[in-house]
Image 1: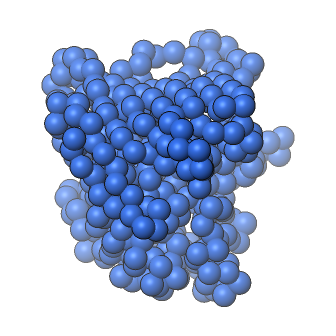
Image 2 (image 1 turned 30 degrees about the vertical axis):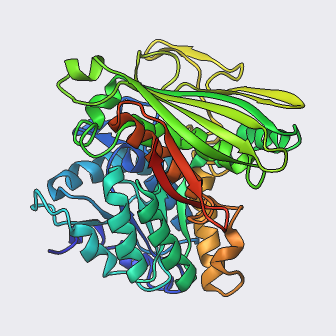
Length: 432
């Protein structure tokens, strides 16, 4: 199987003098990478995508070299290339050419990403936006080739998978990171810093949702290989674990779910999942409680995703409503909206150029690329990026809580005890 030549000629000429730059493979061709869903532009706030757009801009700025994309259905790529040209080249003048795998006439090749990886060199990068259950195997194949890896949240689905990847990353000086862009949201960043000064942890209550249309976008895997908790609760769990790093740890997880709407669409999955976890403050041994709810049955509204939380510490409180920051717009086509340009700014600047480089959706990718370049130049080691990026070593607790939540649901909402090893990391999950 070959990559489509029509998508890469001309691009090779431009990149002939860029051999020192990291080449990047995107695995996954869906909404977040391209903005293309079911043969058309997504109806969400990401119709131009995020990952490919960011990388096209990084290539234009001289940060990366060749760009490749691997999916499972090559017959989608002509439509994707047309979509990218209309949304990115026509909008900003950015070169949107990309090497694609499998070939355009191949309707099904789940292993096409392997052929694409073989076009890369050690030290290049892979960005993974595929169904949750595929993350581990793709990441393993990337690390075998000594490629840095950025993986959409959740990193992986089990503690065993997480531990295996962490060991490989440590032994090979590779960055293996989770793409969890809320770490770059300036509001969340400031909130996390304030939380660390508010004494012991007492209560965290978080909610994140997406509209019912996402059930159609994700129907190929929803309820079959993953669920809405893995997909959305990962954001707020990572925020909490990062904010409480070294201060508190989770001991017990119980999950409950609601259903009905997805089933009416003939999709056997939960509509909403709530994870309740008991935490213990490390010094005082006092207890705290975290309640995280994720849902994908929200109605169409002024935002694509509701994102909010309340945090209570022993010495203060923090409240964040990410979806509403006193900024709203209305037009004849889309009606009333509450946009979030802090995540991604799609409107071109006065000169017609893309201008979203400071947005947190962009920076979560660009900072990973910068870190990978630094490691390859020998300026830093991969371990230097712990607590700066969402590395495999910093996100173990997130995987533990998410897996415990799934275990709880599968055991009639039983409590799942998280046992911690001698080095302070989770060692096992026990059904009570």
